[in-house]
Image (cartoon, rainbow, N blue to C red):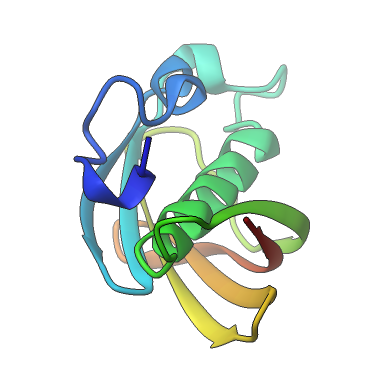
Length: 132
C-alpha cells in the first residue's frame, strides 16, 4: 500500500503510534506534525514522560514527513537518530514538527522539534535510507 496516498489518521498507518496515543494533525511535502497527550501510562518511575516516547514521536514524525516525498515504488527506514532532551515533561500535550532538510538519492536527513506549550523540550536529527 502506498503510504503517502492515504490519510495519516488511517488505523493501518501506524499501529505503534496508536499504542502510545500518537496522531497526526498535519502534513505537507517534506513536513509532518504529530501530537500526543501525556498520560500516566507513559511516565517513567520518576513521574516524568519516558524519553522513548519523545524519541518515538521524532522517529515517526520523520518517517511521515519523508513518506510525503517518496515515489510510488519507494519506502524508507531509519538509519540513525540523535536526540537532545532539554526539559522534563509530566503532563500536557506535545507537538512534534518534522521536516526533510536534505534529500539525496538514497540518504535523507531530517529534523524534529518536540514542544510542550510552545516550549522546546527536545530536538532530533535523523538519517533515513530510501529503498525500492
